Length: 437
Ligand code: GDP
Ligand code: GDP
Image (cartoon, rainbow, N blue to C red; front, top):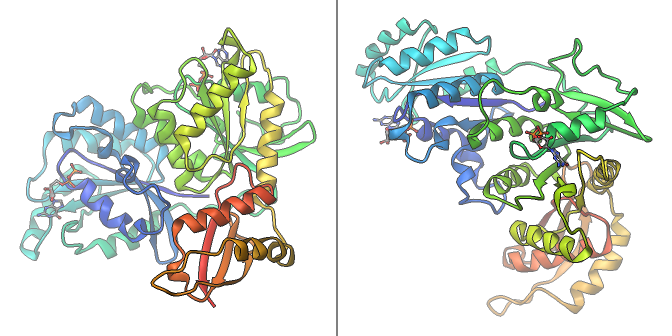
């Protein structure tokens, strides 16, 4: 199960500086999506072999100087609900402020591990200033300087110690894990309720004793699968969900712990920025995707032309990744509810599909011969053979070449498309690597 660490604190204490320091190690690795706003707020950190996600709660407001205190209080509350560890950042050079005290009051009530971090301790002389923060009632402050990086190694050791030690439930099993995601009011609870409905074959009791479990096992119409974080979907929150921050915080856990994400879009509204942000979370985590256009019952004319227009608009927005299924459904009338599950299962099968090395080379090498990578600097580039790496989370293919550094992105995309044309990988991201041979 994945872990989430949230950085909270009032504006200007250094949250985004710390966030960048914690996540920068991974920046080079994460997909093509660099430069999206999401990167500023959500990233991965790896330390001593443990991986966790980090969210900068402050990154969600455009102008953090104008942020209302009430907003900060809500953000902290949501962070305590959704995160596994909370980093509460304060500014040593500024001392304790009223807002610090208010945040501390919320954090003292949570059972989640909370780490008090005295940032901007740039030199040893400033360490004694941190003593003042004992008064917040959250234990010893950890003195760090996000700017210089001093103290962050010890802090990371401590964060890793605080991460919950849970068994990797469900992860080792062969049973697919589906997450229903989408922005508020798109129909997530309605869909989950439609799945559950009159269902009598739920293995795990939803409202029952295993409430900390985020997986609910279903055995429906011959399909065996887990739904991820249904409790989080069904629970109607005390804190309003009008701000995007809340819905995204709630999506992260479900997405991270799934294999296939069922991304719901509202047919009456089309694709909007919030849908795209959740889509980017799915991509960043390299999860497989089924898009559901929900509330289809509300669309007056439902002919093929209308559907095609929808399909084109959705694929255009999500390009360059366009090889995913789209299901038009209604959680209310239950139209195509089973189709959604069936499609999610197909996409899962695609995710674990393995193409034999012999067949792969038989199909791909003649193609590569006919359309070789363009030569670079007068040098002839030869791809000799290829193979699919077994046991990866995402279909991953390696092509061995004499000069791998000259095989560029457009050609890798060409190889990917040819693989997709020949074998079923619909709904799944794919890694194409070119290595030296
Ligand atoms: P946020 O609003 O909490 O995300 O704060 P930022 O990360 O944007 O930082 C606010 C200001 O504090 C910026 O000018 C940073 O350069 C500065 N800052 C952040 N960390 C440190 C630090 O460790 N030492 C010093 N001296 N300044 C820092
Ligand atoms: P959530 O916030 O994503 O969990 O959305 P809900 O499931 O709570 O649905 C929000 C609103 O949309 C509710 O009033 C639902 O009754 C309505 N709704 C959900 N799915 C459909 C649908 O397929 N058709 C119609 N007409 N309404 C729907």
